Length: 586
Image (cartoon, rainbow, N blue to C red):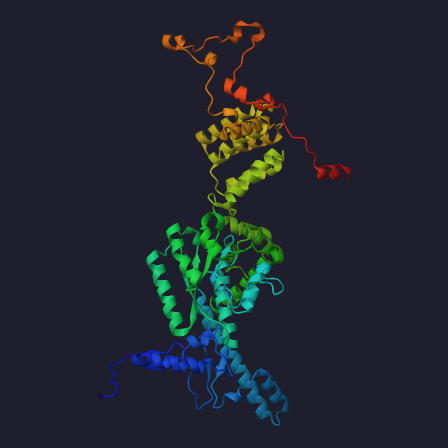
């Protein structure tokens, strides 16, 4: 058989060393290549260097070139000997020791040309990303650039940081509101762990596959699982599967993840804005760590906005040819932060709106004030500010609970606040009106029977005229409920009775209705004893008679008749709040 290979056979790139190898020899090449890569090298390779392919051979001429694939945006030089690379510090040292002015001049020219190349590269990079939203332009490239979430990323006590320090990525669920950096954190964790393991030649290498629960189906997930197994067999790289909006997966799709997460075929990182306890299967939660991401505080958001201003000013000068830079005071940044409600993406969108609206301002004009920024945002937003509020999520239940408790506590101002927050967030006003009808019976009850008709009237007002006209009807009912005297006598009595009947205590749920208080609409029922012996109360003085209304079986089984007195005449409890006592004394 002829050992000579024809040019028809396909050449493929080795995923480890990037050399071109015949398809039929790739397995044997990988065995040899894997052993060579396991030996410690003088210069460790990163994931980006592996993916960038083989480096160019040494050139005879020392020509400067720009490495567009380098994320650090460094300017590199091809020289005959790699050990002859000079840093800026070495050039400065040579300049001081140079015996002639010609030599010093050449060093200065070299440094200036380096700066020019850097500026050229920066301009090309800005032009390449100029069409992206500011939030995407500003996405951090390194974990040290990530802002916020110090409770899990702190070097002292951050649980997630300790995992990454060991080069390990556990399966996890990142739970937090929009715009806190869930996607960025997942990408940076994968990159940092891979780079750390590459430098130490210890641990696993990782690569990430990103998808969203809104588009991924079971067929796509099975393809990802199969690909992850092959990837590990060939390159020993483990697959990190990032699923955005994972709470949108149904039960079947979530169950499909279980064996692969448990066996380690994939490392799952799920991002969700909803409470995992309600939206995810218990089996999936038990296989993942839950990290709660918090909204960024004022200082953290101001840092992000400052970086955004710096990047926009670079784009103004080098891409859009606008010489007048954007300048915003700290008070303006804090105003934008307040409007963003802790959402970094929303804050950057507003910053970009301000930048676009001020491109035609002259250099001699006064700096922007908070009032100017307020006018810009209002003129570009027809609906004004919408707070972070999901009518079907956790925030919905948390806010209505706070609203109910504020009314129960008699705080009319807090009650109005939560009402306004719900309506501004898009809550269904009929839902709020129904809850106030419940409050009128549960918390005011027998102390003021006029509040229940008022709550029903507020509900009718919303039904008939809707918002925004009915907002004052809701506010009026809200304040009236908060100011009214409270009574839970009826609520407690009803709750006690329901509990006793659920257990059929004293045969309350199964006993026969007494014959004397049954109705007898027919002759047969009257002959059977229905209604026999009933005393018609209005026929007696003040309507008072000696007559039992509870079933006889219940009365016989109940040794203590006070158990059947569900209404005890007490509107409220007997406890005394020690904090209230201290407040009075102070």
